[in-house]
Image (cartoon, rainbow, N blue to C red; front, side):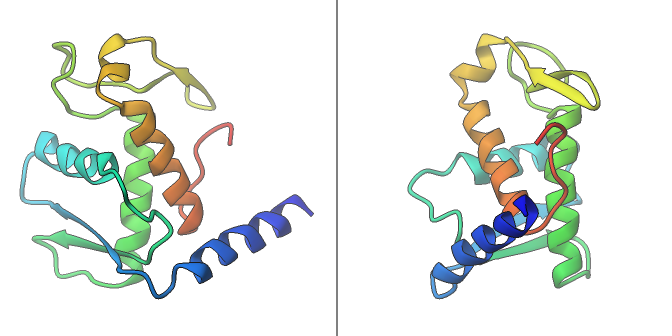
Length: 140
């Protein structure tokens, strides 16, 4: 029953925004990992965005198009949340927003993550993956 209700919920959200200006998420796979991660984080840090608007994903440097790219992007987003981002926050090579066992992750306590709104970014990423039928985050 709960899965059925969740299905109605996400369909209603997407339906109500179907005529909205699409969101365009583009990552250049020719760039290094840090630049790719920065592109993802910058997209999800944007304010005043209708996150239920249609999502168009593109991988610059790759000929792939369509729903496969969207699925790849949502999988990449969840993978990054679980494994960490190549950002320079707090002088570490990889910034992990969540720590712990793969099936039981908890939020990190680094002040730099709070100062840079990374938990807002994480929430938007998890929500987007839910809306666009991507992988779920462990424990959700």
